[in-house]
Image (cartoon, rainbow, N blue to C red; front, top):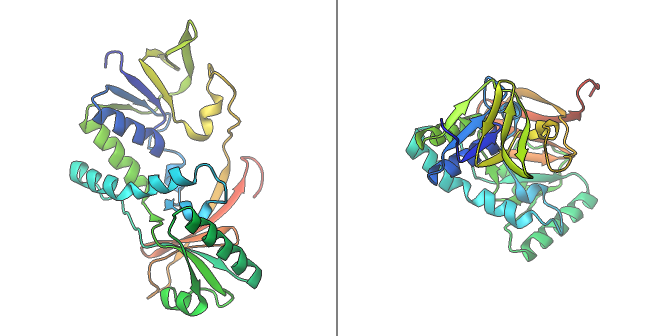
Length: 271
């Protein structure tokens, strides 16, 4: 490829999405990824589309997060039409459990705030919760339900985005170690790799937790990798598909498996 219009540093979901969008707008795009497979973090991601489960009052990203979630059905349809890859989109709602009366009050307050912002959430009584998810812990007293939140399969999503980008002319190069951003006269002109400099009209940094380790950034990024551990158990036979949050953890239905997450820790530190 000659000097591309854009180099995307990182081939995870964000980098792949940028490449997909730019290439469909007739820009020449080169994706550089340090790994042999897409997105180190993508493989272990839960895939929840849960802006109303994780939002808090006065969050400046709330509206943007909800809008992004609402675009997924259109994106999923486009990707299956252009690449044949099903990204496993599921939009039947996510639950956030309350186990005490105090937690129930807190969740009802969250619902009230969300409705004031024009977002769609509701309270499920214990009876309604049992009807929706019979296998829920008997300790639960009710739940917030975000009926438009959902789930996507992260790995098929990144494969579909990259394949769609390729079909629109993008190039993807793997096993490329990106050292930093190259500048001239205070302008970004490309990236420095372990095999030399690649010039580009624009550079998009989408290297996730490793972004802060690139040289030449205009300012330091306080981003570091963390370790997360997820358990996989059998999904209860006969239990309807669900995504459930509670007490800082979550359970995600992955067909015949339940993904339970997650611990947090820094590499080299026990979790």
